[in-house]
Image (cartoon, rainbow, N blue to C red; front, side, top):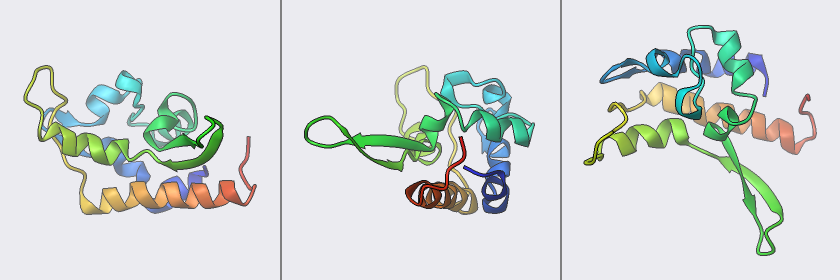
Length: 124
């Protein structure tokens, strides 16, 4: 994961995405729910490189023996919004849907990071 990709894809705008209760960073500014989205773009990027926050971006899959197989997009930033639209049992996450641009940013950031990982170009 590289800062230049976080910035160029538009992931820097993710904390500002609106929900029924305000911007995402209103609740997730310090990692609530395993999601770190603060007003500090650099801190948000750095936290999202770490467990458990990275699990909103990428998750591992396993093969039939239970051994690690590959990384796949987690899509939690995208799917949580869709799930929030269908919640019928309290407490519910505030309703939201990512803008099409933000959804593309989430997808593209994973793809760029994944490609670097597959090429062995990831930094520790």
